[in-house]
Length: 274
Image (cartoon, rainbow, N blue to C red):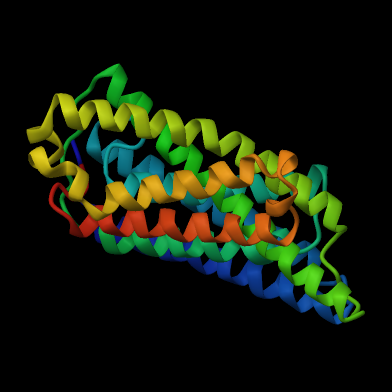
């Protein structure tokens, strides 16, 4: 059953948020050319992940159900931790300078969203394989596109600094562009499956979604479809030079903004949280 987070869970959530903010600040301090903040920044990142996992374990134990993505609070925390784990893994195995500067703020926003929207009692999902596929692919695609947006922003900044012959570029443009394409290449099929399964669920069970027969008029439907179109352009950038480089990076950021709008619209349109 969906479970509203307790005061203790929210306190632990804010502690995790504080750790991620500290990791972001310490990482930014490394811009001054000193490496003495590298280990404290990593320690704060890891502690944020541990505290976030503690929140999920506590929330699931109290709910009496260990299946993830059962409510707003659970879903937003899972998204945040997936991104934080991605940063920790990438920076350890294949470091990309500045990646944490752009991804960790998204992690913080997702945790804040969990605290805000998690207080609203969500609709309990129907436990079918079809609805499970919809949830996992939709949230998985969002996580991949968050990475694409962060790297796209890094590309735009690096491109601007190189054009003005300024130091401090965030990696080579070729690597950043490839990173963006890989992230979009992973997120696009996931989002496509999420849209198809969601459409089938809405058409088959209009009352369950809360949108009724006029589901096609919902802002969250239009925003999700617009994001899908934007990422379709990015995905086909290699065969269409018009959308390569800076345009692909800008579209990656725009697509993620549309997805954030979709998540927000889900909380305020009919059928919120379903």
